[in-house]
Every structure is written in C-alpha cells, then in structure tokens.
Amino acid sequence: MIEVQHLTKRYGPITAVDDVSFKAERGEILGFLGPNGAGKTTTMRVLTGYMPPTDGKAIVEKMKSMPTDDKLFGKGEVRKDGRKIHPMYLFEVKKPSESKGPWDYYKVRATIPADQAFRPLKEGGCPLVGG
Image 1: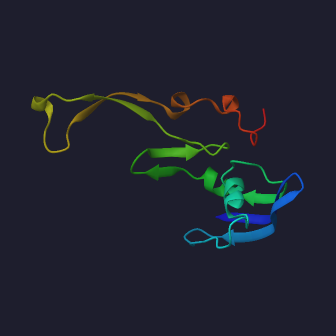
Image 2: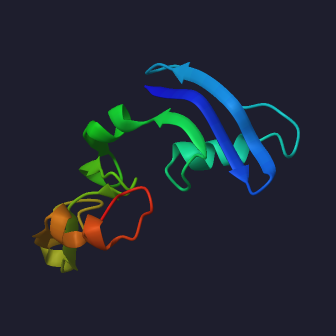
Image 3: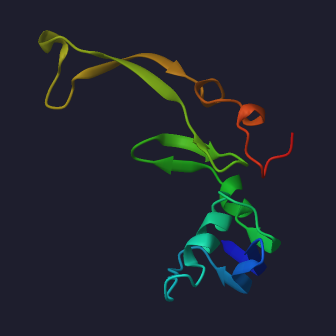
C-alpha cells in the first residue's frame, strides 16, 4: 500500500509538487500522467525516499516492513533508507566432472548474512534516517 497525504515539495521559491494526495492499494496499478515539469519525477523521488518532502506525508512504511522474495536476490528486507538487503553468496565454478546437468555450474562456498553484506544503516548517510 502506498499513501500520499498533502505532499508538497519546494525548491526554494519554486513549488514542484503542490498538495498531492492519493492512495494505491496492493495489486492496484497507478500511472502518473502530465506535461514536463508537472512534478511526476519529484513525487516518485519523495516516495522512494530519495528526497524528503517539504510538507505532507508519503507512507511507504508498510511496503518496507514486509519481507521480500524475488528470483534475482532471494529473501530479504527493505531498510528505512530504502535499500534492499539480502544474503550474498560466494560461488565457485564446478569442474565439468562435478556438474550434474545443464545449468549446474556453481557451488556455494560461503553465505554472507544480509546485515554483514551491506553497509550498516547508521553509516549510510541517508537524510531520512536519523542518526
């Protein structure tokens, strides 16, 4: 679920996004339409945590609190700074005699837990995360 309440973003005297509100439930598809300079990219940057809003509230916390599982990176979580963390793997290429079939080229040599594989949250420098 994504919810935006009275979102405003200003760059000095210029208002890029002015009092935008919307809600997208899980499974809904949402599109932003508008001319160049309408604030579409700025709104997405605020939603993703790339920049803070000047005023209002963008709620993506529910998404960040849910575990993730995708085919490329596997199970993980999204931290407060928006970074997806997941275990990392060290692979070794198998010898042809060790392979048991097509696409059986690698063996896992080590698994690095997510909290050790990524820079700690407190060292990330994200302005949206205090401390």
